[in-house]
Length: 208
Image 1 (tube, helix red, strand yellow):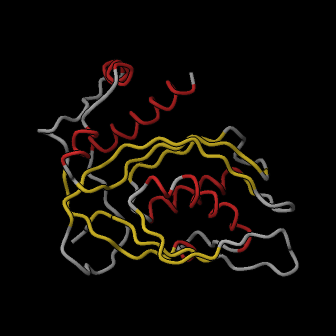
Image 2 (cartoon, one colour; image 1 turned 90 degrees about the vertical axis):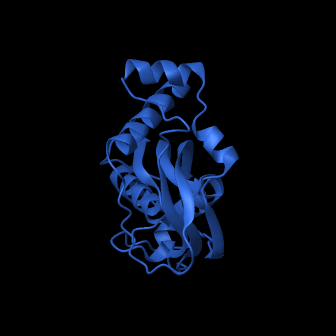
Protein backbone atom coordinates (compact mmCIF):
# COMPACT_ATOMS: atom_id res chain seq x y z
CA UNK A 1 0.00 0.00 0.00
CA UNK A 2 2.78 2.40 0.91
CA UNK A 3 4.66 1.59 -2.31
CA UNK A 4 1.53 2.18 -4.37
CA UNK A 5 1.00 5.57 -2.74
CA UNK A 6 4.60 6.57 -3.43
CA UNK A 7 4.13 5.56 -7.06
CA UNK A 8 1.07 7.81 -7.30
CA UNK A 9 3.03 10.72 -5.82
CA UNK A 10 5.89 10.09 -8.23
CA UNK A 11 3.55 9.96 -11.21
CA UNK A 12 2.12 13.31 -10.14
CA UNK A 13 5.64 14.73 -10.27
CA UNK A 14 6.14 13.20 -13.71
CA UNK A 15 2.91 14.71 -15.03
CA UNK A 16 3.96 18.16 -13.82
CA UNK A 17 7.28 17.85 -15.64
CA UNK A 18 5.65 16.60 -18.84
CA UNK A 19 3.01 19.33 -18.77
CA UNK A 20 5.43 22.25 -18.46
CA UNK A 21 9.15 22.99 -18.34
CA UNK A 22 10.57 23.57 -14.85
CA UNK A 23 12.23 26.97 -14.34
CA UNK A 24 15.01 26.73 -11.76
CA UNK A 25 15.04 29.83 -9.50
CA UNK A 26 18.84 30.03 -9.24
CA UNK A 27 20.44 32.80 -11.29
CA UNK A 28 24.16 32.27 -10.74
CA UNK A 29 26.39 32.97 -13.73
CA UNK A 30 27.60 29.84 -15.55
CA UNK A 31 31.11 28.84 -14.53
CA UNK A 32 31.79 25.93 -16.87
CA UNK A 33 30.54 24.15 -19.97
CA UNK A 34 26.98 22.81 -19.68
CA UNK A 35 26.26 19.15 -18.98
CA UNK A 36 23.54 17.42 -21.00
CA UNK A 37 21.10 16.26 -18.36
CA UNK A 38 17.71 14.65 -17.88
CA UNK A 39 15.17 14.51 -15.10
CA UNK A 40 15.43 11.55 -12.76
CA UNK A 41 12.23 10.67 -10.94
CA UNK A 42 12.99 9.96 -7.28
CA UNK A 43 10.93 8.74 -4.31
CA UNK A 44 12.00 8.81 -0.67
CA UNK A 45 10.73 7.86 2.74
CA UNK A 46 12.14 10.46 5.10
CA UNK A 47 12.44 10.15 8.89
CA UNK A 48 12.99 13.36 10.84
CA UNK A 49 13.98 13.47 14.52
CA UNK A 50 14.94 16.66 16.35
CA UNK A 51 17.13 17.04 19.40
CA UNK A 52 15.46 17.21 22.77
CA UNK A 53 13.71 20.52 23.31
CA UNK A 54 13.50 21.42 19.61
CA UNK A 55 10.02 21.41 18.04
CA UNK A 56 8.87 22.30 14.54
CA UNK A 57 5.47 22.76 12.98
CA UNK A 58 4.71 20.30 10.22
CA UNK A 59 4.01 23.19 7.83
CA UNK A 60 7.46 24.69 8.55
CA UNK A 61 9.13 21.32 7.93
CA UNK A 62 7.23 21.02 4.65
CA UNK A 63 8.34 24.48 3.49
CA UNK A 64 11.97 23.95 4.48
CA UNK A 65 12.32 20.53 2.86
CA UNK A 66 10.69 21.79 -0.34
CA UNK A 67 12.82 24.96 -0.41
CA UNK A 68 16.07 23.09 0.23
CA UNK A 69 15.43 20.50 -2.48
CA UNK A 70 14.45 23.18 -5.01
CA UNK A 71 17.62 25.14 -4.20
CA UNK A 72 19.81 22.13 -5.03
CA UNK A 73 18.12 21.60 -8.40
CA UNK A 74 15.00 19.52 -7.75
CA UNK A 75 11.81 20.22 -9.67
CA UNK A 76 8.12 19.69 -8.87
CA UNK A 77 8.79 18.66 -5.26
CA UNK A 78 5.93 16.90 -3.47
CA UNK A 79 6.19 16.32 0.30
CA UNK A 80 3.51 14.48 2.26
CA UNK A 81 3.63 14.49 6.07
CA UNK A 82 1.58 12.27 8.31
CA UNK A 83 0.74 15.10 10.70
CA UNK A 84 -1.46 18.18 10.84
CA UNK A 85 0.28 21.28 9.40
CA UNK A 86 -0.28 23.18 12.68
CA UNK A 87 1.05 20.41 14.91
CA UNK A 88 4.37 20.90 16.72
CA UNK A 89 6.58 17.83 16.66
CA UNK A 90 10.13 16.69 17.32
CA UNK A 91 9.83 13.70 14.98
CA UNK A 92 7.93 13.07 11.78
CA UNK A 93 7.67 10.75 8.80
CA UNK A 94 7.34 12.09 5.26
CA UNK A 95 7.01 10.76 1.75
CA UNK A 96 8.94 12.79 -0.79
CA UNK A 97 8.78 12.61 -4.58
CA UNK A 98 10.65 14.87 -6.97
CA UNK A 99 12.64 14.99 -10.18
CA UNK A 100 16.32 15.91 -10.08
CA UNK A 101 18.89 16.55 -12.83
CA UNK A 102 21.40 13.85 -13.65
CA UNK A 103 23.87 13.45 -16.50
CA UNK A 104 22.30 11.99 -19.65
CA UNK A 105 24.51 8.92 -19.82
CA UNK A 106 23.42 5.76 -21.61
CA UNK A 107 22.81 4.04 -18.27
CA UNK A 108 20.78 6.93 -16.86
CA UNK A 109 18.65 7.21 -20.01
CA UNK A 110 17.88 3.50 -19.83
CA UNK A 111 16.98 3.75 -16.15
CA UNK A 112 14.74 6.77 -16.76
CA UNK A 113 12.71 4.97 -19.42
CA UNK A 114 12.33 1.57 -17.74
CA UNK A 115 9.20 1.05 -15.63
CA UNK A 116 7.83 -1.94 -13.78
CA UNK A 117 4.32 -3.25 -14.47
CA UNK A 118 2.80 -1.42 -11.49
CA UNK A 119 4.16 1.94 -12.64
CA UNK A 120 2.89 1.30 -16.17
CA UNK A 121 -0.57 0.41 -14.86
CA UNK A 122 -0.76 3.52 -12.68
CA UNK A 123 0.32 5.66 -15.63
CA UNK A 124 -2.46 4.22 -17.79
CA UNK A 125 -5.05 4.73 -15.05
CA UNK A 126 -3.94 8.36 -14.60
CA UNK A 127 -3.62 8.92 -18.36
CA UNK A 128 0.04 9.87 -18.07
CA UNK A 129 2.41 9.21 -20.95
CA UNK A 130 5.62 7.64 -19.68
CA UNK A 131 8.82 8.91 -21.32
CA UNK A 132 10.73 6.89 -23.91
CA UNK A 133 14.30 7.26 -25.17
CA UNK A 134 12.88 9.23 -28.11
CA UNK A 135 10.84 11.85 -26.24
CA UNK A 136 12.76 11.95 -22.95
CA UNK A 137 13.37 15.59 -22.09
CA UNK A 138 17.02 16.65 -22.12
CA UNK A 139 18.35 20.03 -21.07
CA UNK A 140 21.64 21.82 -20.29
CA UNK A 141 22.72 21.73 -16.65
CA UNK A 142 25.74 22.84 -14.69
CA UNK A 143 27.40 22.37 -11.32
CA UNK A 144 26.75 25.27 -8.96
CA UNK A 145 27.82 25.98 -5.42
CA UNK A 146 24.84 26.28 -3.09
CA UNK A 147 25.09 27.41 0.53
CA UNK A 148 22.18 25.40 1.88
CA UNK A 149 22.19 27.12 5.26
CA UNK A 150 21.83 30.55 3.62
CA UNK A 151 18.95 29.87 1.26
CA UNK A 152 16.95 33.08 0.99
CA UNK A 153 13.56 33.03 2.69
CA UNK A 154 14.05 29.85 4.73
CA UNK A 155 15.83 31.43 7.73
CA UNK A 156 17.66 28.24 8.67
CA UNK A 157 19.37 28.39 12.03
CA UNK A 158 20.65 26.26 14.93
CA UNK A 159 17.21 24.75 15.45
CA UNK A 160 17.32 23.30 11.93
CA UNK A 161 20.61 21.45 12.39
CA UNK A 162 18.88 18.09 12.85
CA UNK A 163 16.74 18.59 9.75
CA UNK A 164 19.81 19.44 7.67
CA UNK A 165 21.68 16.47 9.07
CA UNK A 166 18.80 14.09 8.27
CA UNK A 167 18.51 15.45 4.71
CA UNK A 168 22.27 15.19 4.26
CA UNK A 169 22.26 11.56 5.39
CA UNK A 170 19.02 10.25 3.91
CA UNK A 171 18.35 12.17 0.68
CA UNK A 172 21.43 14.05 -0.53
CA UNK A 173 23.46 10.86 -1.21
CA UNK A 174 20.87 9.93 -3.86
CA UNK A 175 21.05 13.28 -5.68
CA UNK A 176 23.66 14.81 -7.98
CA UNK A 177 25.32 16.60 -5.07
CA UNK A 178 28.90 16.93 -3.82
CA UNK A 179 29.31 18.12 -0.24
CA UNK A 180 31.95 20.86 -0.15
CA UNK A 181 31.83 21.81 3.51
CA UNK A 182 29.65 20.87 6.46
CA UNK A 183 29.36 21.57 10.15
CA UNK A 184 26.34 19.68 11.41
CA UNK A 185 27.35 18.83 14.96
CA UNK A 186 23.83 19.13 16.29
CA UNK A 187 23.54 19.40 20.05
CA UNK A 188 20.63 19.72 22.42
CA UNK A 189 21.93 22.87 24.09
CA UNK A 190 19.50 25.76 23.81
CA UNK A 191 21.72 28.18 25.75
CA UNK A 192 24.71 28.02 23.36
CA UNK A 193 23.39 26.84 19.98
CA UNK A 194 25.83 26.28 17.13
CA UNK A 195 25.06 27.75 13.70
CA UNK A 196 25.01 24.87 11.19
CA UNK A 197 26.93 25.07 7.92
CA UNK A 198 26.29 23.09 4.74
CA UNK A 199 27.76 24.02 1.36
CA UNK A 200 27.32 21.73 -1.65
CA UNK A 201 27.92 21.60 -5.38
CA UNK A 202 24.70 20.60 -7.09
CA UNK A 203 23.82 19.77 -10.67
CA UNK A 204 21.05 22.23 -11.58
CA UNK A 205 19.24 23.16 -14.76
CA UNK A 206 21.01 25.94 -16.66
CA UNK A 207 18.81 28.98 -17.10
CA UNK A 208 20.79 30.99 -19.65
